[in-house]
Image (cartoon, rainbow, N blue to C red):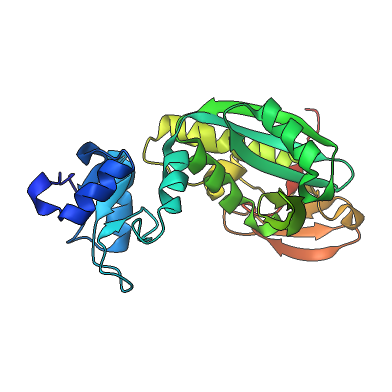
Length: 263
């Protein structure tokens, strides 16, 4: 699938005015009118396009769409999110001992962001500490990919911001090391495969799972040590825990730690 550039005459006066008002050039736009949503999203990713000319929205007949398919003209705030998605920044992992939770976010300067989190008592805590930070292109994309990989650990939270109760969407009930490993895997996968957009099983598991491998479940320490009862793969392993019994787990989402033995 190749990029289809937009000739200026294809746009309506309203569309041209909207693009000019928001500082969006034609080089940041693709013609996605003949593409389905998945094809449009893929082409936008390959082309690093900000918006696509697509099908008319139901509300007002606008055609300018974000990668997620939202109408940019009906909700211009989506443009700021899309720009953040593609911008160079740092993706960071932070930890609150008080909440026993981990946060994954992106910011131009994570140290400044952490200070603000503590001032605002993000999630109800003021003890956020920076654990790891990585500068990268398309930081928003990396952040979302890590969030998707950790979605099994996601927990809700709230805090007061500008006098209003605000929801938190970046909190995870997993050890910081788990989030750090996912972030490193995403960055490594992106470096070796420019088309990579999300973390999946192979990046998370790395080595093969073999019968008799010993593991701990970091979210279920009460289960004790476990041993694989059969060879496994990226989608499924079978583990017999000392106190947790027989369990079938998905390595890509379970917070597992291998128990290494010398020799």
